[in-house]
Structures are given as C-alpha cells and as structure tokens.
Image 1: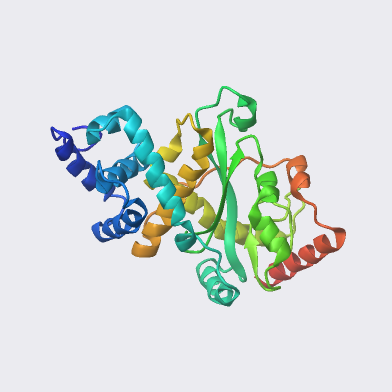
Image 2: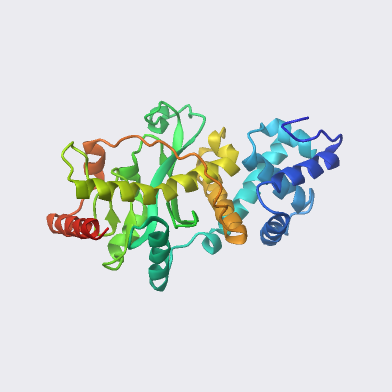
Length: 332
C-alpha cells in the first residue's frame, strides 16, 4: 500500500489509482463535470494530456505528497509538474465568478430564513471569519508572515452561507496581519461601505471585527454580561460556527492547505482561491453532508488594538449598530 492507495506499476496504472483517490473528494459525476469545465480553459495544451494536468493538480491539492513523488506517480518531471500545477490552478481561479459570488438582494430573505431555521438567529445572510494557511517562511521579510502561533502563513478571509458555501473570499495578506486588519483591507468592506446591507440583514463575525450595522459581533464579556447578553452570545456563537465548519471542511478535503511549501509566494493566493472554488464546486453539485462535522478551528483572541485598528466606525454608526444588536438580542 502507498499512501492508502494500492501500488500500480507504471505511470498509467498510478494515474488510474490517482483518479480513484481524487474521486474520493467528489463523486464520479462531479469529477467529470469539473474535468469538462477545466478542459475548456486548458484545451490549447497537448502533451501531456489535459487529464494528466488536471489529475496531477487535484492529487497535489488533495494530498500532502511531495512534488517529486507526484511527478513520479504521473510519469512527468518535477519541473513540468510545477508548470502544470500553476496552469490548472489558474484555470480554477478563472472559474471563480461562476462558483463564488455574493448573493443578490432578492436572495437575502431566503438566505436569512435558512439561517433562522437552522440556528434561530434572524436576519443573517452570512458568517465571516479568517483562517491561516501555513506556508514555508520566505527568506526575505520573514517576520511579516509569522502569525501568533509562530508559523509562517497567509490569511484567508471568507463569508459562507448556511450550506457552508463561500459567498466571498479574500486572500493574500501575510500571517502577521490580524483578522480585523484583513477585513479593513478587503474589497468586502469596501463593497459593504458603498452598498450597505438592508436594515434587517447583516453578517455575523466574532469579536475580532468591529460592530457595525452590516456586521453584528458578540457582546464583549467583561464578567458583567446580563442574561439577555449571555443568551445572545450563545446563539450568536452557535450560528457563527458555520464558517468554522466551512474552513474545517475545506482543509479536510484539500489537505495541501495544511502546509503550502511553495517558492513562488505570489502564486499562493491563487492556490488558496482554487481550493475555495473546488470546495464550492463539490457542495453545489453534491450538497452538504449534514453528518460531516469537521473540527472547528480555535482562533486567537483579538486585542483591543486589533479591533481598534479596523474600527473606523463613526460614533453615530456605532450607536446605530449597538441599537440594532440590542433589538436582535431582545427578540431572540
């Protein structure tokens, strides 16, 4: 046995085993549909076949096997495999507008209703959080990539719906940047500042994010919360867990995200984005397995400076957000 896959001699036999293993991440019909989608973006390549390029890339994303081992498995050189990997990743990123997109305003009511039915929190159109993707620390500007756990990483910020599908992603910030600053830097904040969510709708974020009418966060626990506020925080947490589950599912299926050992730092955001496309592609075509319960991540507790750095909310906006949160808490 080799990585849980029966050893098959010769590249063609190993490709057959790889095809079987990759399809463990998705059903055969879904894998075939993905192949056809990507093939349109890769049709101008001849040798090796498009199938080899796609399968080798999916294998790399779904496993932690080194590039040299995967190159041997598919009967190509390590240098060629690097090229194929980037080609297919770029093709996946080209599919992103079709599979990761913000809901239209007329979809908000149904989306909020699904969250409400599942968790009892009204008005939610998405849950937001950030996660770290470990990387091999670069030789230059290394400290910028070191996160609070002492690891080199890139940040991924995402919003998900009640089916754990990503509706927005933003990646590319180094690991030393806190969630709050990532949000401030993101196009999502710019979008919501320009086009605020309607009054009855909002995102749920943890205490790393600034309270806003667009973003409802829990009450800060100073040891003096009222029973109403404690109840609010409890229901808030049980609803917000959707995004933690989404990240858990993403990393469970696409295990390369456990550690990206890549010299081309500028391509890492594309690799991260490609796995988010794959994540949504599988969920859209197969639905969510409600029995799947990937382990939620434990996020660092933000400092006051972290939150203040991202909170450029005016006094009037802050008061409006506090009133909105209070009204939600009373009605839970």
